[in-house]
Structures are given as C-alpha cells and as structure tokens.
Image (cartoon, rainbow over all chains, first blue to last red):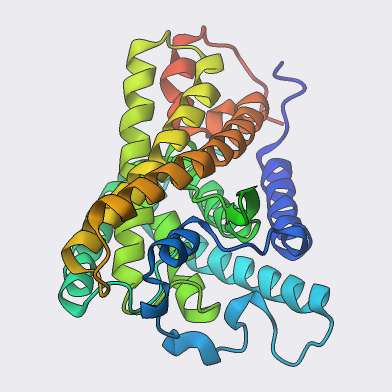
Length: 106
Length: 227
C-alpha cells in the first residue's frame, strides 16, 4: 500500500485542478432554480424584503464577469477567479496559523 | 442558503454579527492546534473546494435547487475550527466579490453556515465515531450523516432568527416547516457529495483527513520509505 501511495504534492495539485474545473466548468451546468431559502421566501411571502447587496456593482456580481459576453466564459472566469481568491486568502491564513515543524518533515 | 440583506432587521443582524465575530475569534485560536505544515495547504484547498462546490446548484424538485454548504466536509477533512474558517472565508469572498449573500447579512451567514452547520456536523460526526468501531471505513459514512443533519439544522436556526427579527410578518410555523423540509432534501445531496469526497480522500491519503486520525493510529505501524 505504501508504494502506491499518492504523493502529497500530486494529491494537492490534483485537488486544485478538480476544484478549478468545478468552479470554472461544471458550474455552467448548475441548476438556475431558486435555492431552498429563496424558494421558501417566495412561497411564504418574504422574498420582497430582500435588498440588493452593496456589492452588486462588483465586476463579478452574480458569478458573472462584467464585460465578458459569452455566458460560459463569463461564469467560468468568475468561478476560477473566486476560487483562486479563496485559495490565496484561506491558504495565507492557514499558513500563518499553522504550527511549524522545524524538522522539515512532510 | 445565503441570506441576502433585508430578510432580518438591524438588531438581529448586529447580534449575529457579534456571534460570528466571536465564533471566528475562537476558531482562529482553535485552528492553531489543527494546522501544521502538512495540513495547512490541505485546508486552503478545502476552502477552495467548498467555494467551487457551492457554485454547483443541483435540482431538488418543484423548481427548487440546493447546493453544497460544505460544513461537514470541511470539519471532517481539516478539523472543526479550521472548518469554521474555511466556510467563513468562502462566505466573505462570496459576499464581497460575487454579491452572493448580503453584506449586513454576512454575520448571519457565518453564524448559520460557518458556525451552526460546521458545529452540528462535527458533533454528529464525533458522536457517530464514538459509537461505531474506530475504522477508516466508518469515516465517510459518518461524514455523510453529519452532512445530512447539518443542512436542516442551519435551516432551523435561520427560521428561529427570522422569528426573532424577520422583516416580514410571516408565521414561524410556516417558515420553519418549509425551511426544514426543503433543506432535509437538500441535505441528501450534501450527504452524497460529502460522503463521496471524504471517501475518496480517505482512500488515497487517509493521513490528511482530520476525522480519520484515531482510526489511523489504531492500525499497526508500518515503515514507509520517504521518497
């Protein structure tokens, strides 16, 4: 078993590629129906209390990229950029928080 | 289940903001014990994967959809405190960059999806792991059950918040019944995705799964050559 073990680096790179494919490609095929909360809000009558987010002018509001006409590309770029921003923020935070192992053992 | 601005009144949003800030502060302390050189990059990837997974809404019938929340997934893979931080980072980026979930509602969303969902998922997972045999094969099914429970619990907490500070006069029983029922169905999708992803990681690199640690320790030691 140990000989067939996937190296940590391979595992991490493969996971990142998978995450970017999900955010950049698979997301195009996501259901566009309202989600559970939105549906319930509509059904029980409080959906109209929702307000536009102050961030609705963001160039990537609604998981679309402003200025990119092609729907698939627009959503794909927003997904990949969003995923990379999360990676940088969360990865940076966890790097700061981690216990360091001076032995350099991986 | 991203709450937009306007659903909850200002006092409730401020209260959930305080709860969220307190929870994140505790998580920042707790995560130090969970993260080391090996698991920190993994945790960054888990946050990225949760963001990606949340983009893929799946249909659950009657013109309604749901998507992964990722609380159970993150808690089992990288630990509950780090899981809170993973989901909270995702929510922050979604609110600021994608306008998904409100800005004044960010505290509410962190409370629901970052703290309640992750916390309940971890409690259910730990409970199952204590009752069931300490084996690697148990990890993914336990994570799936934790995921299933976490979604309607978050929906229940939203319903309670709405009863306290909802901006529209809708009866609590109507909201809670519909919220919990729909999110029980969405929880099935959450359970499926969580079980598959956790099962895959356990199959390939169980040593990188926080929730599998005790099961790994229970196995006899083997000598591995470092490549």
